[in-house]
Image (cartoon, rainbow, N blue to C red; front, side, top):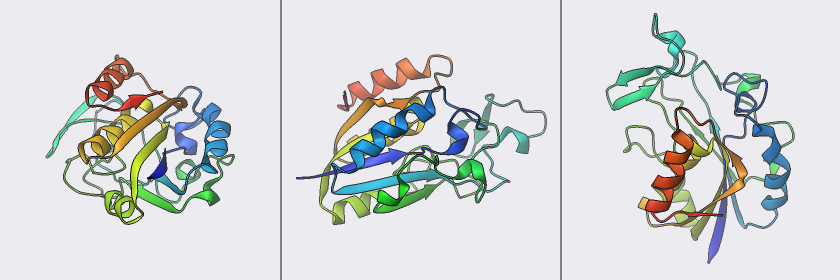
Length: 198
């Protein structure tokens, strides 16, 4: 069986000093780099937002970052402006061996819909194309690492499990945001859906 490594959003804005920094986000880079050589299929995902993205609190007058908004597809956290297309913040962390990737999947580029998962936009139906790529490469088992454990990693893992992949999340190569208990909730939800946490 072919196992794929999916590296989620190891970008400057999610690392210390970034616009939406995850504590210790840069600490996982050496471990991920060491893992890249062990997989025959290697995919990096990249948050890639237009400046007018609907998930940015700045685009909703009077809305505070981390407050909740309502989108056509349901409730949505309104985030600080981050990972704007072509900016330094959207670039991969300089220490990450991004050249080792077979494929880079950009997500969140549609102005009206956010995208946490590597597989689907937040409407849960618009695909990114990653599933088709993995299937044509023969990948059946997925190892997920990256940022942030409780948002983009968890959403990706849950979607992968729902699609029938054998999914593992390596927690030592992830870091979480933990917004109002979101980390514990995400770990519980992943385990309930058969995602292995190691």
